[in-house]
Amino acid sequence: MTNPNKTLTQMSSATLKHVLDLALELPESERAALAHALLESLDGPADADPQQAWEAEITKRLNELDAGAAHTIDAAEALRRMDSRIRRG
Image (cartoon, rainbow, N blue to C red; front, side):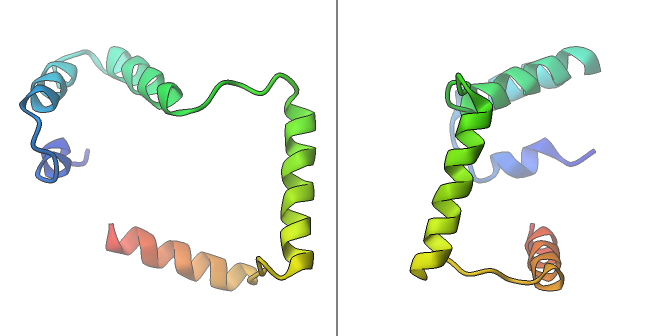
């Protein structure tokens, strides 16, 4: 398990540290439920029509490619970049 207090070195809120300390005392299943609820709170509202939302996103990305506002990279380069970011932490 990663050290949650390492993340807190960048955060100064005493309330945040207190909440984290309390959360870490919870059983694993309750910590998982809490983590899920927190992650959900970061998402916007669910799309009423996910299929339409995906089609709109695909169209937007294709238009960006056509306009030269975005470019593609091959899979090996994408994996190299992900690996580099993971290693940097």
